[in-house]
Length: 81
Image 1 (cartoon, helix red, strand yellow):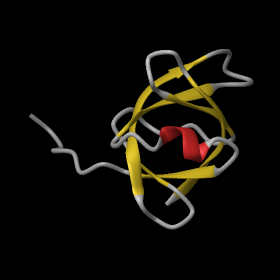
Image 2: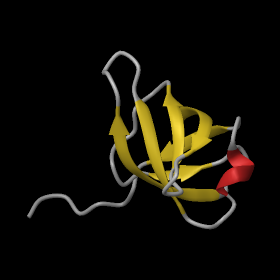
Image 3: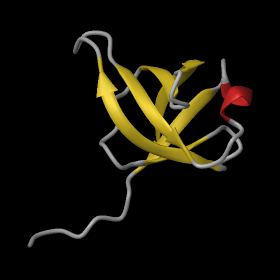
Image 4: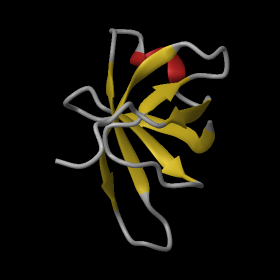
């Protein structure tokens, strides 16, 4: 498990925006401090020196996460082709 960073706001289209301390991979599962799944990593934007992570929320409780720390766990992906 890897700490992503702190939620700064909710975007107009409902994505959770996180000021990234560590950048996860696209598709990684995102958890809150209680280890509940809140969504998946949807996009990484901004400069390399100060990136932001967009998380597509799993449920409608995104507004309650503002100011909280989120964590990522690698998604289960098939390797190879």
